[in-house]
Image (cartoon, rainbow, N blue to C red; front, side, top):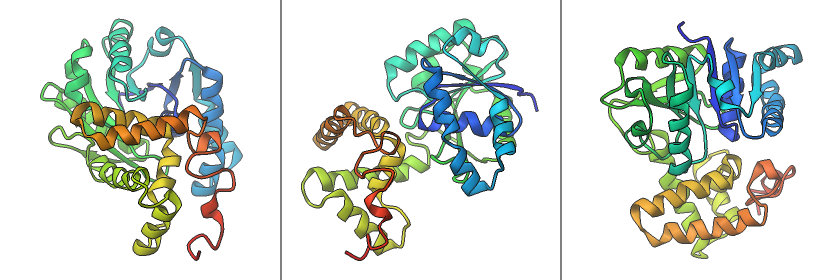
Length: 295
């Protein structure tokens, strides 16, 4: 296909997964992050999951790593990029600054995409110099097995560019989900965000603690995970950004209350799975107890 060199900007929970999944499937990938050493550690930490879930051997996993490079220099990261996927924090000012800089540095051939969970393309396209080559490509967490790629453009997106991204999704073993018009939250988060907001509202109102909410959901529906387990997996800083954006756009007091409680946890270093504590304690979370759903 047309893409050979792909740049992933931002290597948080999802950015690191996108970078590795793309490299594993044959592309030359450059991961841009202000802290390349941290980025390398995040990507390397995916090894156990890829081996457990996909059965990759050490050699197969390392083959993916061999196609990945890391840099803190954006100009270096995009100098020959065919495609850039931005996976930066859900903050409009950060994204505006990034896209204005990217537009100056990227070759004319480069297609831009955002993995933003909460912003729509029309919010960000005004910051780029090539609206015909701009769209969104949104991934679910644990993309190696929850392998959807929601693709959404603007009325200025070139249909040929849209199709190139659909083709790219197939090559990296995603199931492309083309959206025919802008929708905040795409399909996945349009369904998921109200669910986790409802769970957090029960928590901040004092109706039930996170473990109780998770137990009720899991027992009642047969789901293998509860909402607070999901939140720890995503990372509470990302969740805080999403809830803060919701408060700024909708001005509902419950969003501010939730954001404030999350900020207390983040300030205490309790950001979720990656840092060892969120709503649960890791590496031996309370829900791993065989009797978790029996008590």
